[in-house]
Length: 183
Image (tube, rainbow, N blue to C red; front, top):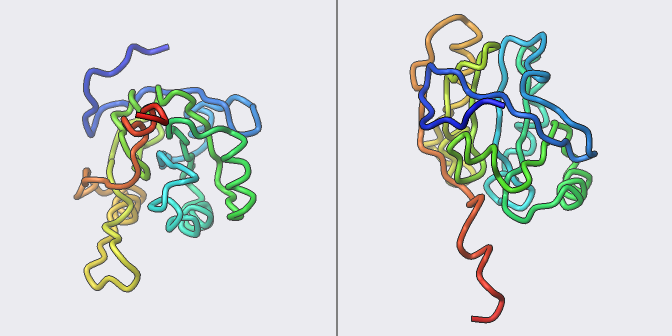
């Protein structure tokens, strides 16, 4: 296994990882990349309201981008494979979800909230990281897509113009998750 990163820079190689899928099988990032031009890795949670609004986007991702792999990494503290399977069934989710029990991969990838997106090429070079978009509310006239333009630029052989954006969402690890029930 590679040594943990001390920092993560756009243009540098991100570490591979191997995690259990929600059925209990093992999958690695490199396996998802096999035969693909690149991948989008989304740190995701089934209980995060910010993630819920991207269900349709993630379900249709492979239709829009067959040359890219998509993998969701569920790293939220306390979220179990059983909870994720139940969420997947209830919401009709079709994209692959890996379980990052303990959040080690989230920490390795410097991720503190869900959703957070990473676009990498087939050699695991980091091209983009941040938010999918700046969604605030339905019909927002100031909505700006971030991930889709980065994907389009990458797939057309152009440099990614905006390689990093701030992401926002639900905490993966919070002091509130570990406080005793009675104070």
